[in-house]
Image (cartoon, rainbow, N blue to C red; front, side, top):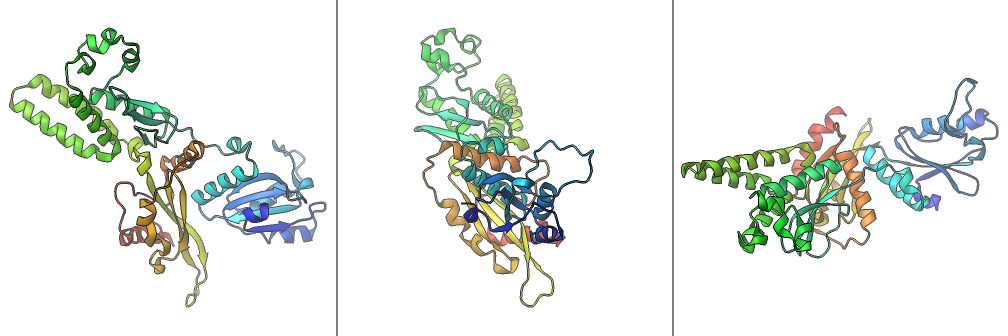
Length: 383
């Protein structure tokens, strides 16, 4: 199994740390990747992401002469006979490969090995008589439901839900509706709800508000803001100052949705994020220096697509198929794996200093020429 998972394997004799042993370690690549220590039967002992595969192997297998050195991890050198490795060259590929390898090698315990941020989503159930936004732990929409994400935290998702329910006056006490005791609703009594349950507005008008909220959550924030601004101006012209003030208050709440926390939020079924980063430097004919290659990944709810590494001179290779990959949709059968997939994505999306390019393809696919120009300006300039 390990032979199939990893690109290379180094057989070692760790019983005596002689010059031969140290020469063997030099055969390992000095690049970022994943590394797996195994015994003679090919059973995995430890799996890790390594900033430098050779250095990591040396740190784990070479005994220290410092008697005062205290290690919190057990010495695995006596039971290690093989070192499996795969070069990754960048952070996202290393995390992705580590996750996939851990899931295969340690199916019962991989979740404790891969520390992914817990995911919370926003959802709206359209089968409820008065639809409203709530938080959810599943990224997969059920029948007559829409789910939105990703968010950096549960609090961000909660705030998102609260803002949408308040701005569009959606039901905030569905529990009372289900119990048949809507008359006791505090929002109804304080007249801070349009009260469709009490017949004060029509079901069609309420559904229109729900549709606007969904449009806002699906990336249409700017358009909805313009509608509110236009409405506020009209109300002011008609001297409806109280209504205009309420509209201004709603605009203030919508402004909060422009924070970085909500930059990537969309209908999870439309989720499509392209990541490009540096990969290996390779020798090419006609060049004395090795040339930088790049890796590209497309993260969807149902899958993560890894394109073949490419040179800028290759016209981006398989990225020419980006539009087809974004358009392709397959059924999502495993909610847990979909959640973990978005967890890996979120781990990188919400870093203060992200490495590589991160492009949102859910609201429009960038032209390949634009992608190439962006790579040249943001990634190739340091070559």
